[in-house]
Image 1: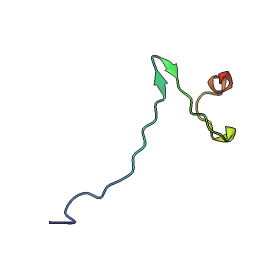
Image 2: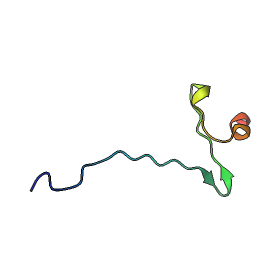
Image 3: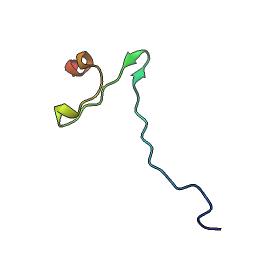
Image 4: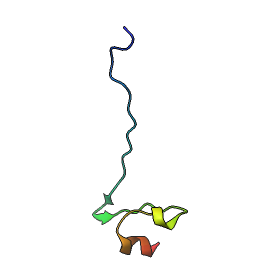
Length: 43
């Protein structure tokens, strides 16, 4: 019967580390970059 299931939801998973090293997310807008500041500066 329609409507008996769970409503879909949006889910975003972001890596925070790989092989023991922190990850960063870069953006065209530097204010939107995420991750440790020292790691962002490396890029």
